[in-house]
Length: 404
Image (cartoon, rainbow, N blue to C red):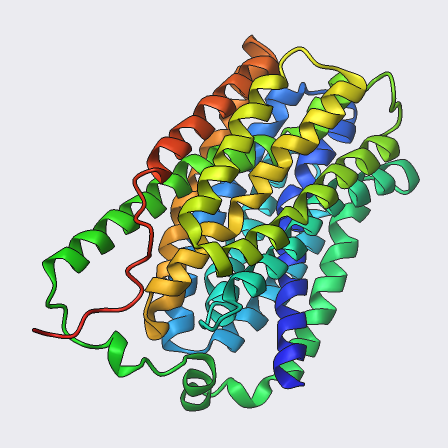
C-alpha cells in the first residue's frame, strides 16, 4: 500500500536522523581523544553548533512544510543530511568538525516537525504509529554507537560519517522519485495536510476549554524542555559512561558499541508499550508511570560499575525512551492539521535548544565531579517532570466546544 511505503520512508528517516546526530558522541569518546590529543571534556563542546542548528531550524522547517510541501521538505532532509555527513568525513580539525556538525544539524532539524506531522494524523491508533516510528529513531540512537564503534576498529572514524551519508543520499533520491507528483505546491498541500473538520475550526467560546488548553500546552512545553535534559544527558553520555564503568566486561570500542546498542535497543521497545497505553489509558497516567521509573533508576546509578551499571542503565533508558511519544501524542491530538508541522517545530526547537545546552553541561559536570553528579541531576529533572505531569487533566482538550 502507498501509505505503508510512505510510513517505511518516514521510519527510515527517523532512524537516520538520530544516527547522524550521535555519530560524533562515539567518535569523540573512542577515537578523536587519541587522534587529536584532546580530552573528552574539551572535544564534546564542538558538538554544540550542530545541536543548536538541530533546534533553531526545526521551526522554519515546519513552517515551510505547512506552506509548501511536506514531501518536498522531507526529500531535502534525506539528500541534504547525506551530503553534509559525507562532507564532514573530510574534516581535519575541531573547528572544521563543528562546521560540519552544524550543517548536519541544520538538515537533521527537518525530520521531527515534518515527519511527525505526516504520522500524527489522528485515528484510534495514533499512539501506536508514533511509538513505532519512535522505535526506529531509538534504533538509530543505538546504531550510532554500534556502527561507529565497529567502524573505528575496522576502518576508522571517517567511514562512520560518509557511509551513512551515502545511504541517506540514496534513500533521498528514491523518496523524491516516489513522490515527485506531490512536489508542486497545489498537489503537495492537498496530499500532505488533512482538511480540518468543522469541529476543529469552530470559534472558541468556552473559557474553561481555553484555560485547559493553555495549561496543557504549558505543561507540554515545560516537560519538553526538562525531558531534553534527560534524553540528551543519557544518549550523548552513555558511550563514555560505559567506557568508564564497564571495563570489567568490555575492553574494545566494538564491545562498548554493542553494549550501548543493546541497552538502546531493549529500552526503545518501551515506546511500543507506551504507545498502546496512550491509545487506551490517555497520557496522564502513562506519563506519571514513566516519570517514576526515571526517578528510581537515575537515583540508583551513582557508584555502580560493570553488570550493576549495565542493568540499571537499561532501567533508566526504558524511562528516557518511553517518555518520547507522550508529548508528540498530545500535540497530535490537539493541533489543527494545517498547523501541525509548525507546532511540532515549536515543540522541537525547545527540545533541541535544551539538548545543545546539555552538551557543555555534561562536559562541565564530568570534568569537575564525574558522572555520578550527572545522574543526580537527571534524577532531579525526572522528579520535576513528575510534579508537572500531576497537573495534567484526565482528558485532553482535543476539540473545541460548540459555541453557546
